[in-house]
Image (cartoon, rainbow, N blue to C red):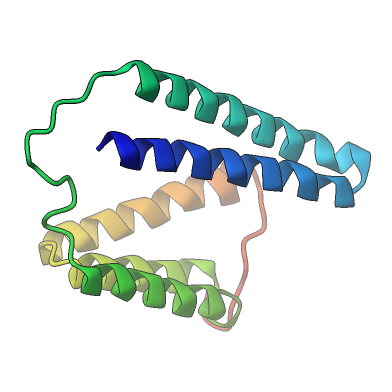
Length: 143
């Protein structure tokens, strides 16, 4: 597990550095927040790496992802690509509803749980982004 954590730490550090370097391509005023996020991610990655290096791990022979199937992983990735391509066609809420339902049912969750989670998430996003923050979300031909 320690090797995986070290790989994760260096990967997130690499993402943070790449993200920071890419912010040089946008105007300085607009780059403030992305640079802040990149610096924060690199600091958190460094803390994670130091903590991982200082922690003594016991190998109990248990794999954290033993129940995860590769088929499920590729299922979620492929559904995510379809979701991103449908946002501008169907609109944010319709495509998000369909995406979450398909992912949860594809990952073998209970139907009631999948439905309630999806409804709750869509209502939460609607209240926060549409009502409180008044952020425009992609509209499709349905909603």
